[in-house]
Image: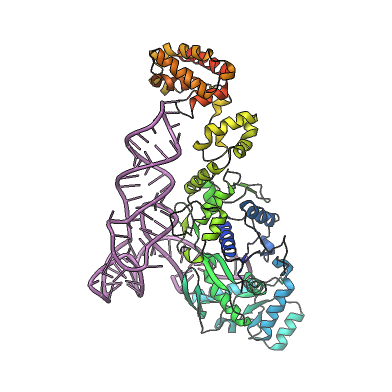
Length: 501
RNA sequence: GGCCCGUUCGUAUAGCGGUUAGUACACGGCCCUUUCACGGCUGAAACACGGGUUCGAUUCCCGUACGGGUCACCA
C-alpha cells in the first residue's frame, strides 16, 4: 500500500511555525516514500473560523516549497477536502455508530454538564468526566426510553452524539516516534462526536476522513498524543484498521517554560510565523520569516533539524536532500527549544549560496543602479545574514557621514594622520576617474605611501574614519570605488576640516 | 490534581553496554586582515538524582525529582 499522509490544520489564524514543521515532516515522509501529501482543512469549529486563514496556509506552504498532491485547491479523488463541506458524511457515520449501539444521543445542557462536574469534584473524584459510570445519571438515549428519545429529537431539542467508551479496556498502540503507548479506557470519557450544531467534532471528522482518504500515517504534534487512544477506540468502533501514528515533539520557548507561542516572538524579537499576518479582527501585525528576510530554504532547513537529525554531521540540506535522508525513526522524542540564532546562521549560509545577480536584484531598489547593486553585493555578501543588510549595514555609502566616531578620532587621528591625509588626497587626485577602481586605488595608494616612507597600516583606520565616520566596516578600497573619486575627495576634505576643528 | 510523554554542554543534537562522551550555533582566545566581519585554529562547557541488572552503565529496568502535553458541544 502506498503511503498517504495529510496535513490537517484548522483555519483559526496564521499557521504557527510548529505547524509548518509538522507539514514539512509529513511532506518529507510522503516524498521519501513516493507517497502522497494531502491538505485537509479542519474547519468544523464555526465560531473560531477566521477568513483568510486558509489562504494563509496555502501561501505559507507554497513559499516553503511544500507541494500538495490533494487538497482544497488542487482537488483530488477524495474531494471535498474541507470538513465543513463533508457534513453529510460525518452524520451518516455517526448514525451508523448509534445504530450499532456504539454511540448514543445525549441531551444534557452545558449547565447540567457543569453541575455534574462540580458534584464529582466535590466528591473528590480525580477526573470528573462523562463516562461509563456517570452516563447512567445523565439525560441520554441509554437512560431515557426509546419513546422519550424519539420525542426529544422530534421536538428539535439540542443534542449531541457521544461515543460509548467501554469501562474496562486497554488501548495500546505503537507510536513510530515513542514506541508503545498504553492507556486504560477508564481514563477516557464519552467524547462528543457530533455537536449540537450538526458539525462533527475533530475526533469524529478526523477518523472518518483519515479512513476515507486512505491515510496510512498520521504525523502530528505531541499535543494530540492524549487523544490518540480515543481515536483508536473510534477506529475499533467502526471496525477499521487504524493508520500508523507518529507524534512529533513540540517546539518550546527559547527560554523559560512551555511551548512556543506568538507572544515569544514579540518578546524575543523574532518571527514565529512563516509569513507576516495581519489579524483582521484588530489589525495587529505578526511578523513572518519571509518578511524578516529569511530565505525559504534556510527556514526549511532550520525547521527540519528541530526535532530530527540524519545521524551524520551534515547540517545543510536542500529540500531534495532532506527527502532523501528523512526517516521517522530519527525523530527525537523530547521537545526542541526554538533558537532563532541557529535560524540566522542557516540564513547566512544560504545567502552565500545565492548568486550575485540574484542578490543584486534584491537590493536594486535601495542601491539605485544595477552597477551599484552589483558592487554592494561584492562588498557585503560574505558579511551579512540577511540580504537587506547589504545596504542597511553601510548607510555611509548612500549619505556622507554626519559625525566621526569620537573614540577612533581620539585614538587614531594623530599628527602622522594629519600630515598624511592631504597626501592621500593628493595621490587619489592623481588617479584618472576612469581608473578609479579598487585594485588600481590599492596599488597606487600603497605604492605611493611606501615610496614616501609612510606605513599604510598606521593611517588606514583613520582614512576609513574620514570616509565612513566609523572605525570598522567592509573593504575600504572597494568602498572608495563605489563612492567615486569626486565623493572620496570631498569626504577627505570635510573630515580634515571637521575633525581638526 | 488525574492520565500520557520526556530528561546528554546555554541551545540543537551524536551516542544505541566498554568512547579522551563527538558535532553545530552561541561564548572566550589566537591567527588572517587597514578595521570589523568572513574564514582557519583553539578553549571553556553536558550524561538530573537514587536504586538495581551486568565484569562493566550515558546507554537496559524500576523509583524520585524536574520539565512538557492533555483533561470542552476547540482543533
